[in-house]
Length: 348
Image (tube, rainbow, N blue to C red):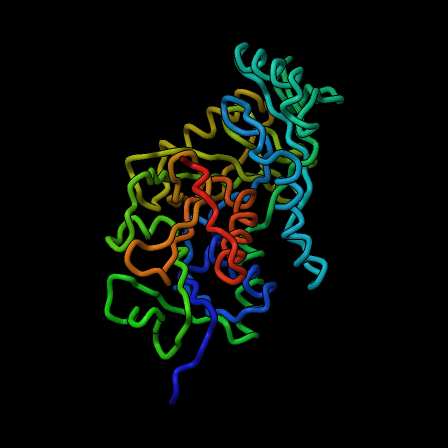
């Protein structure tokens, strides 16, 4: 049987690979998305929070409102075509637990750094649910992506287009051929391959992975009767409503124990930080852990292989992949198929 031709081979079906597949499809090009379909990957554990002002420095989103709108439009385009819902608008209310954070917020707000992305909250806190914390900020245009639903629906749709295979593309193995400027894998030929394998890439010697600082994150699944789920609450940890009395809470950052094993230590840390702003009792009914592919400043990047110019790396989505990933995927597709310059690494 003759080898089958695809314009692009995508090695890894997490957030990065799935976003890249959609952008490739919209560009009118063919692709093969290859993934082992295993539970416990960072993408499948991810909370999917769209937060345009993050970190202890309260830094506004790189690219401002235009970048936020681009990310949301990515999900809404798929929703409109297939009558599905992946993105759920939810304002974020953030507790400023330190005086220096309050001062930093006031300075940035007065300087116009937030472009309307952040402001003072209008409503009072429910004193029966939350601790009395005077200093807060509100992010009205935030939300969450149901990442598992997005990944599973995308895989199913791409499968109907005969554009998926369960498996692994290992650049250190003989099963992938990179001769004559082409890519060959398991009976498929393509002009180019993009590796989107997240943390797994750091275990390979094929790419230079200096600058990666992967971090294990743990998330709790909670039931909190009586709280309601109209906004995401953030202190030193976040509390995310996912429907009814169910919530997710997290996340931890562990730079040493890079495994997917939930720990009592992480559970205790999250519970303690929740009680800094939450009065209501809660029940923990689940806990997940995974390793995020964090790179330098935590922003996604694209890179071409030093030796094989038909081979690319798309990685580093970190803890904000749902927000930063769509623009990065679109920029890479513009380079691969339309001759645009490869976007510079935003982490430099």
